[in-house]
Image 1 (cartoon, rainbow, N blue to C red):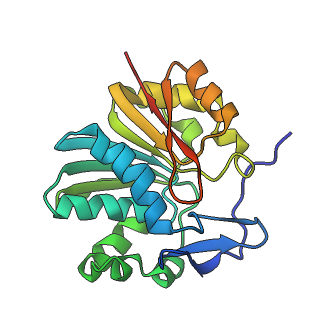
Image 2: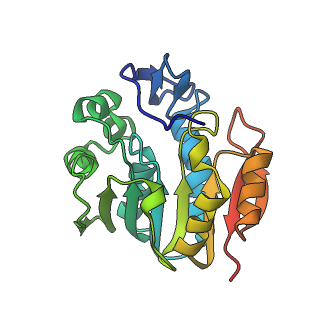
Image 3: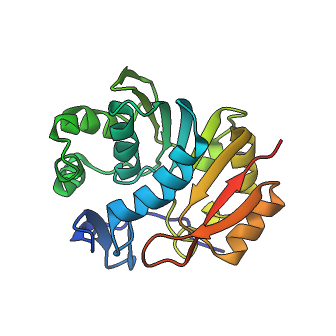
Length: 229
């Protein structure tokens, strides 16, 4: 039986190839983002292939695996720039501590230091209620497992950003993707950095139409799945 994921205590900041920071655990042998570039990967997979591909001015976004909040922040920047308005729900059963988030300096490194305080308030709230919209983005953090999720026809885009199947195999099953399919609206999309054959087959078995796309630097492919009906 697989042991459920539990975060190790040794996550520490590490600079990736594009200059942006991630957190890496030596114990786990894993990090929150690609070592080829944290911002580069998040922008390629979740913003361009997910948020921008949806082609909508108003969207409901679900993130599975909030992590360091980089996907949230990149989405927020696009809202502040007037490109879209987003209601953003994040599932994260293991929220990072404020000192871990501060060590990454995501807001400063993206040249948006003015977002630091509201970003930290949202990342460390953990109570499940909606924060008032700011800069075109409303946000709630649910410190819950995807296994508890019962939403239906609620989201236009899902950012599926759990740790890799070798670390969190329970996150990449047909049962989980059935929940994702129910949570998506017809025509809604799920995007993930992972392109393993077993993951693609689990998505397809859950009734999602899956396509392989070129991946970010360091990865040949990524996956995008669509709820057709």
